[in-house]
Image (cartoon, rainbow, N blue to C red; front, side):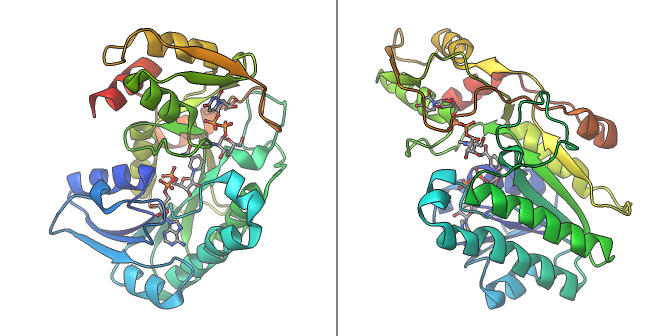
Length: 308
Ligand code: NAD
Ligand code: UD2
């Protein structure tokens, strides 16, 4: 099997590429290296890397050639950037997605997986969030992710692709870039704890998130790739542990890890504007459909990051 992974040099993408190669697949990566890094990818005879833009028709056509499936992870994953530069991020996040879906349908690529986001739910208080909850995208990023789902469902319904969309919650793990203030909180906290630098909690620290380890996300994608049956409507799955963890619980767990530079120095600052108070997924649909279970608890995932 040959699989195109767009955004394969990024955080989640590089783990997906490694899993595919380990299963004996041949992999094509299309990445513009805007946030992804070549160093995230192994040297492997079964891996072809194309530097290019997912919104560029020629790059997508070449990268898809000979593939049986695609896993579409390329995106400007920064919500904050989508608010500052909605047209720039729209080009990658929606135009690039349509470009890929349309070319895959044209080339007869059978299977397609798409990275959507919990952001499509907005600040809904109907916890745990089931996929049937009406979406309420509050940012350009979320609007593009949701529109991407709708476009993919259109190709699926017409029988032109066999597609599945995944709404990732807060993914964490090795190779997540901690360099921006809007990077994942776990990557920021561990990077700072490792160096003995101070940590800032925005708000009281009682806000909760549903953190899911990147290896578990990859397992869900791998399980879906093996599915041949195509239901009439495109499946959409939450990907999360289905557990809420407060930032104070997270700090407590980090403080107990080997590999941090002494006791944590923690200060509090004002809560971020628009910050969601609680986030929690209902994961029953994914568990039932794909037999998926999250295998990596928070502590084990944190330790894996420090071990890198
Ligand atoms: P990432 O930034 O590490 O990966 C994105 C990759 O896409 C990078 O390698 C980047 O260089 C590449 N890319 C960006 N624009 C491109 C373009 N125009 N053409 C080709 N490649 C391009 O982010 P990630 O956390 O690995 O996210 C992967 C996917 O999962 C994204 O679609 C993101 O929106 C989604 N997602 C992530 C999370 C999370 O918690 N990390 C949560 C929800 C959804
Ligand atoms: C996630 C996504 C974001 C968007 C949003 C939609 C990530 C990295 N971010 O934001 O892109 O999809 O969901 O709901 O996946 N925090 C601190 N100190 C820090 C950094 C963060 O206290 O140094 C807090 C932050 O205010 C928030 C929590 O930690 O309350 C989690 O922050 P995050 O940026 O990791 O993720 P989130 O859920 O806000």
